[in-house]
Length: 291
Image 1 (cartoon, rainbow, N blue to C red):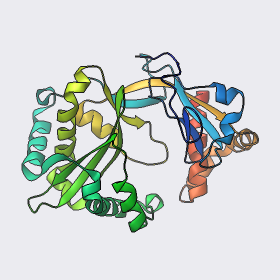
Image 2: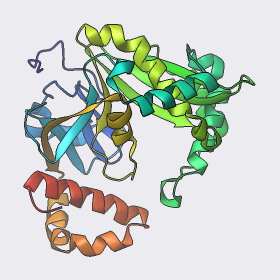
Image 3: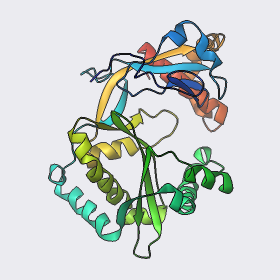
Image 4: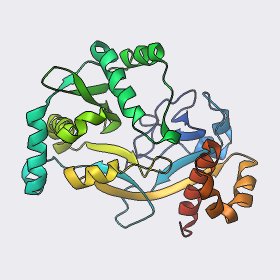
């Protein structure tokens, strides 16, 4: 599935048509299957994007190319049916449904509870991935999520929120923004319960041509959540081609450090080195070198 580039599908980014600043990079705001506006890269105006100083621009092409590549999105483009998965998985899902009441909720009404789940989940991460959250600002941000962000919550028998999933409802696809759960509830299959409910509620629109996207291949964060989606809910990899363009001067630094990238991996516990390793990893993928 591929869309033509028109004024209608070039979305507004953070101060730049079709692009936004995220984590030291300029990334497209269009759907994964759409072709981003590359004129901004060619004329150099992409480096003036608001929100930060991007060190590189990253985008993908050749969406769902039909053969394996080293870059992909994890998507679900057909309705989920319980009978499609193994009996063991069905049993686990039913256990979760029995233990938790899952429903779509309004973020504004549950901002405090969502924050508490976020903090509990954050505390279980490895040290280098733990973030510092300002309670007041985070709750205010959650309460102000735009209408396109749909949120599901999982409640235990005591009516406590134990997990939430936020999904951006776009024109042509659904984008999973965040999924968090309290560690103590995971043994009772809270993740399976809430994600099953999300898929149930979105099945109709998926059957009409939309798809759910859980994002791209992960580089920095060591998580098996994409594999989790594939195993339990039959998500699949949509293979594509990764493209990078470096800011002036950054390409030279990458070229110098690239031959010693394997040595840098031993120092990933430093945030700066971790970010550098992510760039080196993506550079290897783009070049087709051994990872």
